[in-house]
Image 1 (cartoon, rainbow, N blue to C red):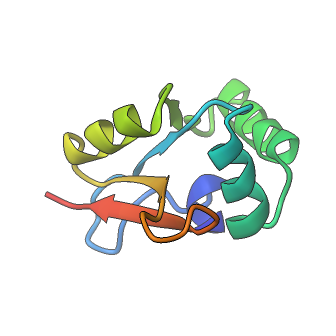
Image 2: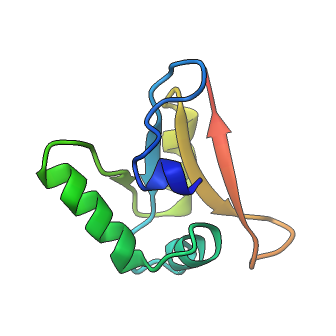
Length: 100
């Protein structure tokens, strides 16, 4: 997960390009995902994205406004990845990946 969101892994094992989606930096789910799953702070992730984007070496994840928009974007984008809360436990962050 960390390799994908720090832009070190840009393709799935089958060669399909990874398109990452995220929620806004201040969204509580983004904060939990960043801290719990990626083991870093949101500002650290922003620095990585900015450095790679402005140097021309990568493209930052696409930011959507709501979890619903994130799910719809993933459903409609081959190779997409994102994160949502589990219906059973609001503290759990799950990753969804849909390949077409």
